[in-house]
Each structure stands twice: as C-alpha cells, then as structure tokens.
Image (cartoon, rainbow, N blue to C red; front, side):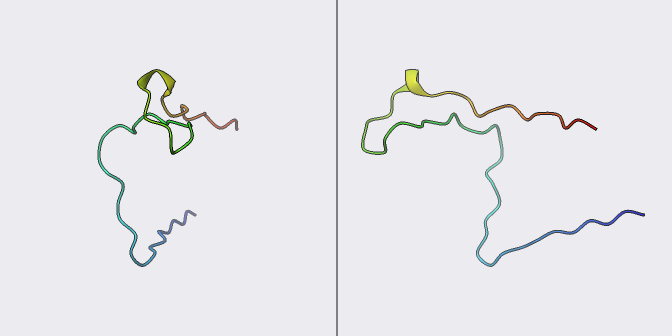
Length: 48
C-alpha cells in the first residue's frame, strides 16, 4: 500500500525553473562578491 499527499498554502508560488543559484552567506549590507559564493550543497543519498 502506498499513500502520497500534497500540501498547498495560500499565496505560495512555485519555484523558478532551472538550476538553483549560488548561495552568498555574506552580510546583507556588503556588496555581492562572486569569489565568495558557493553552489548549494548536493543532495545526499539516504541510507536504507
């Protein structure tokens, strides 16, 4: 037997298509620095 469901919240928008953008974890008041960004972490496989 298998069950699945989908939760929808009011006002929620779908994510934009394409690859995720790099994450810049610097302070928000600093200018964007392309040398300080890193790609989002890769998805880890779950052990079974």
